[in-house]
Image (cartoon, rainbow, N blue to C red; front, side, top):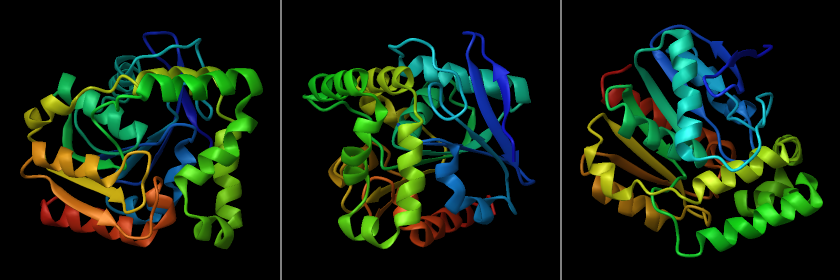
Amino acid sequence: MQPKKIITTQGNEIAYVIEGEGPWLTLSHSLASNMQAWDPQLSLLTPHFKVLRFDTRGHGMSSAPADPYRLEDLAQDVHDLFEFLDIKKTHWVGLSMGGMIGQTLILKHPNLFHSLVLADTTSKRPDNAKQMWGERIAKAKAEGMTAMVESTLKRWFSDEFRKAHPEIIQKMAKGIETTSVNGFSGCCEAISDINTFERLKEIVCPVLILVGEHDHGTPPEMAHAMKAQMSSALFFEIPNAGHISNVEQPAIFNQHLIDFYTSTGFL
């Protein structure tokens, strides 16, 4: 399906696709990815929901304004998209950066979400965030996004998965390569400043937290800490999965989604 585009209040083009029927459900992808990363979830979700996928600014087919960006900017892009589509309330599934955008959105607009799924994400910047992300930004600007592919895939997926599923890895590699340097750098700046941890207790909608067992980017201990801040949240660790758990273990990821929506009465 060919994406459509809107122009946001900040003058950015945001590409999006809508599929399925039912209540709105929005999918938000990771850094250096795009809406196609949600392909393993579509056949599961579209029979039950009107599924909105979009490319975060600087990614996929969305425009890439000059960096840096803030998480508030990324959240405003989404809010503008919701306004354009007349979305008053939606379910949200965010992975990594998508989970950070979701946290930022719900803390600014508390009644916007029916439910919130936070997968392989964080709410607190590590002590070395500025240095780590600064080094990645410098490399991308000096050498281009092709230079980021191999190291990113190694962080995202296990050696076994990369060897066993070359076609999936090739698709994810293309997503990294085609991310603009502006978009990558800007979003690196944005997520290096994530600081929602102390406010998580304000979130009252149903929450599901998922994390890959071998996620080194946003590790299980961070997910456990987020769960402790949201006592009613459901929490599951996905075995044999790294950072992009919806792609590495789609059957388990999808089952947790269905169980969550069933248990909360949304299915």
